[in-house]
Structures are given as structure tokens and as C-alpha cells.
Image 1 (cartoon, helix red, strand yellow):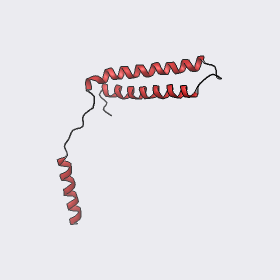
Image 2: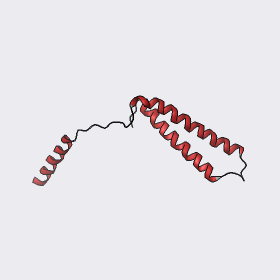
Image 3: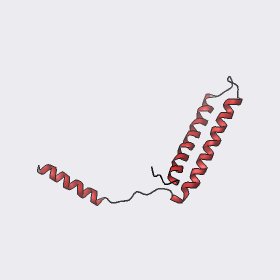
Image 4: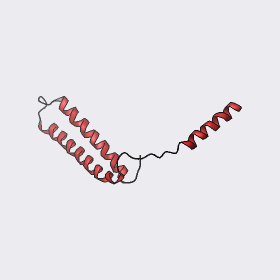
Length: 92
């Protein structure tokens, strides 16, 4: 139908006109250093969490401190995993 042909032609014009490349907000050379830094911080926070769980008695533990430490460690390990993948050439 004429309407479909018009939409197809508009779509192809739109795609051909939009040839902007996607670039990283960070320099690619920073990926290995960021990977090491964020994984190291995440592992230190994870170790801190486990030490806290092992040394503090059950009655004196703070749920807020546990959740905060676990959440921050998780964020750092997540970004660390991302930067490890990016540094190794797996662009996600």
C-alpha cells in the first residue's frame, strides 16, 4: 500500500541521516586502572563485611551498617566487573 511505502522510505531516510557514533564518557585507557581500583575497593569492603559478621556478637550487630556495607561493596564489585569486561575487550 502507498502508506507502507511512505513509512518505509521515511524510516530509511531517518536511519541513513542518523550516523552518529556512540563513544565512551571515559577514555578507554582508563579501563584497566578503574577495573583494578573498583574491584580492590569492593573486595576490601566485602572483607570488612565478613570480619564484622564474624567478630561482632549477634545482639550488638547493626542491620543498617550491614546493609550499607553490603550495598556499597556490591556497587563497587559490579562496576569492577564492568570495567574488567571493558578492559579485556568485551564491550557490553
